Image (tube, rainbow, N blue to C red; front, side):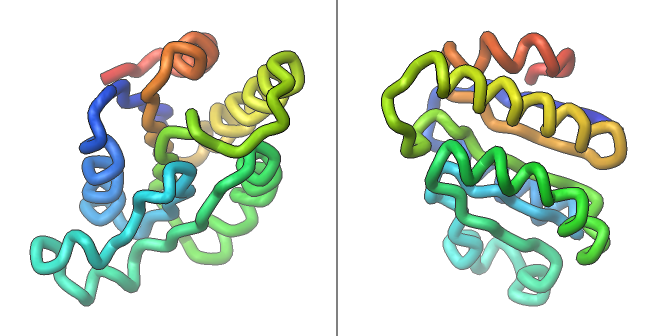
Length: 141
């Protein structure tokens, strides 16, 4: 399986990732950017496809890590083949750079581990996450 990182500075990255999820169902979207409203894509995406994409809202840096810890169980239960993660540069944190780095590093380790069994696509919008991602993701687009 693969780990693909999509680096894009524009606001269209969220829409592009959501479209990717609908084009590669069944999919799970971890929405870290509060931007994955599937109804926004109507009428371009048929309503019947809404049954094949699941979205989990992530608003805290710790929720991202904790959700990634249980994602393998979720994807097995729902028979997911594609995991899409929107950029997580705006997640709520406690302004402790060292702690944030450790949590993000662990999150990237979990993402990489998921990519051994599933296709995982991650959006990158900032230099900080790009630097960490480069340690785990060899497939940038």
